Image (tube, one colour):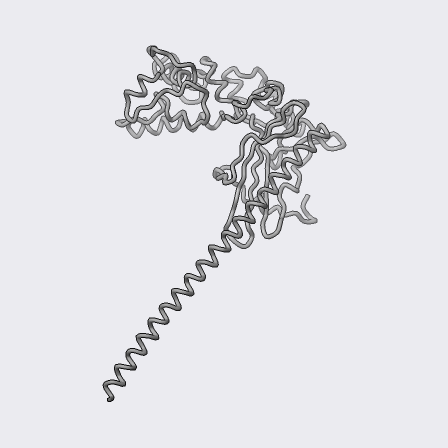
Length: 353
């Protein structure tokens, strides 16, 4: 009888232990479900807060256009785009409304002029300028087979297909004969990443570490000074909206980009004179130039969770028409150099200028 009681006690203890494990597992699952639900809620809220930033940006563009607040330029302190001067004719600071609280999140939206850098597809059509850039900024010796091969291969990638391949450059036959072969594109570049597919810049089997590093550095140098806006370049829209045919905004481009454009012969303006005038004129060089084409990047961060959401869109104002979207990315991942956490501390308050 005593033995039976001992067995019953052990069974009760095992059942209680099992029930305890079940209760712990249930509690953990419930906690996980709650966290997932919270994150989903915060993701949705962050998305719509970021959307609010996009809409405020479009409103700001519309107001600036309605009041003819040109030109656009960079605030010398914050480096953010500003539209127009104030009533006294002086430069303005970036509006504080570009960082705001909404519901349980903080939103920060900003503008980028799409012509802050040199259009790469313009460079591709200018072989002397392309070779100058490779020589001066990529460290490739002039009048060598290497510089001719890379320059001509870049041109061949974008120009009409050719049935024969010259001494330099590369067409379908060269690319198909190599590892993981593919065809030459024979069309404008759609992204700067395509440079990594070009003969002389693509990483081949058997490349040394030094060769791989050099190729990556050349591609990175191109990305630093050039960009591609495929949605704008392919749009069947009057190109005068991009600043009366101008391909580089001297008001918003940084001094390095302007210097490169001058060095390779794409602009004749003296970079030092441009910078001096901007420093004495609130960042403005050209008084009547407006790009008519902008990116708006809006980032929302939830205050009670690590959830962050960024949206990026590009907007064009064709002649005598409203700003229209050309590009939209609901889940934009900001590059490390685009993230400025200090800006998110600029919450609207009575003390902020």
